Image (cartoon, rainbow, N blue to C red; front, side):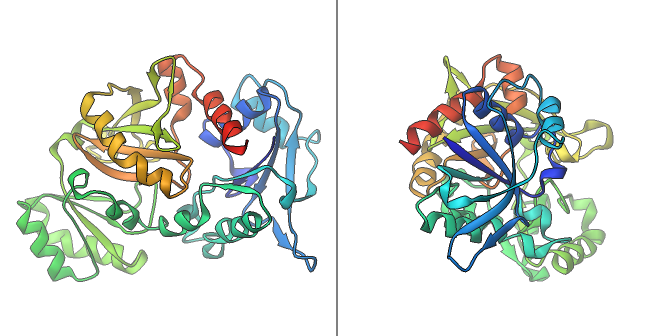
Length: 334
């Protein structure tokens, strides 16, 4: 297969990224991979989509560091490729990372993904669904039984009333955003400061999400990986990690980018049931790879832009989940 990986910027990729892991797995399994950033596309007068992209020989790269070092070296010269000739285009850029500094980049991958799709390229995840998921509203399309009580508004009075209705403890976060940016835990003692928190979110991000606080969140969350709507498994082992907040500074965010730590997950029957409820819609929406963040019997977020953490799951479980993803991708292309 000829697989294209769309990232925010080839120069800012990290060895531990799930995208790096998937690209290494694809190379190891003999596939031709191409890396391109969201700013590297062009649509030419002949109606074909092109991209400045980098490739590497199909072989085993033992570490993410070795892979990215070679990708950025003289051994990997930048080439102009016709995207229409790829077998599959994986949209792996986190659009919300570009929201402040490069707002033009948020929809670039999705829009050029539509053009590649028009030319017959398999584009994953489905660009139309990705466009809807740029806000955290996507979770609200799933059954209410798996969602925390949630208010989405710009009205501070509505927000205050909701916080009071759930006992004065809630999570305040932007409708758009990722990586734990501008996420606040509201306690009854925080009442004098709530206005300022809301002002920050509404001024910088637009709408705010006010979500009931789940006490189990203090213990962290479980990140699950679903492929084609099914739990990603290898030899009976489930691709998942447990993410724990940084207890040293009292932070309630489990995101790795916010200082959270990961450990081996315990996937119980409740978590498996949640995955079975969420899976069919993900499949119908054209979502090939998704990350679910679960606390207790609720889903806090569904990440279909660029779910990370798979490298940690591989290390904890001792199996190559990334190679299984590429094998399932082979089947999907066929």
